[in-house]
Structure formats: structure tokens, C-alpha cells
Length: 139
Image: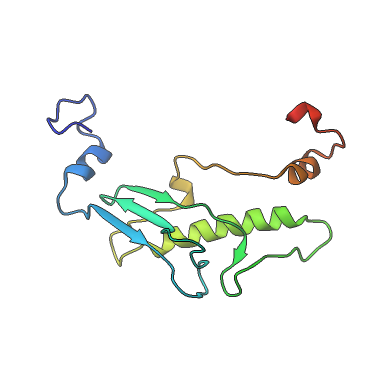
């Protein structure tokens, strides 16, 4: 962002948010103990970083159940373990975004407001998703 205000989109929400000194420069969320709403940080990082109340960067989420810090298991043989873990990962991401609410000014947002996401899937999960035996064409 340019500070001189001559950029073509100087009226954009993002640009205004970064220039508004009433917004916090940075806010972090770091779950430090077992909770019922989000998994504990496994490493030395924050689950979410918010810049100027406008941009939220989430750390990677895995399919841990917050209360037990164990991977979620399927309750039916019709669903594979990676599918329920993927669903739990999205629930965890949504919970972290909800946790950023500071009592009026929503600092987090919702998954529906996301600009993008990246999902890593193992080759075994890919094989079960595609229901094929030979994945040489996908490597």
C-alpha cells in the first residue's frame, strides 16, 4: 500500500482500514490450553493474525477435536477418516474466526468471507476420493 494516497483504489475498504489509526495494527489469537471451541496450538504460532481489523490470516487447521486434542474418527463405515477430519478442520477454522469477535466490532469474519483456502490431501485420500487403483496419472 502506498502512503501517498495516489493509488487507483485509495478508497478501497482495505486501504482505508490500514490508514485508520483507530483499528489495531495487529491482533493475534493463540489458544494456550484445552478448550471446547478450538484446538490448542501445537507449535509456537498463533491460530489467527488480524491486520488493521481488515485482513485475517489463519494458520493451518487439522481435524483435531478441541476437547480431546485427538483426531476425529468416523461414526459410520460409509465415511472415510480423511473426510471427517477435513470437515472438523473447517469447523476449527470457523471457530477461530468466531473467537476473534471482540464484542461488537467483528475482527474475524466468517468462512463465507474468505478470499481463498489451500487444502492438502494425502495420496491415499486422493485415491479414495477418485475411487481409482492407479494414481500414476496424478503425480
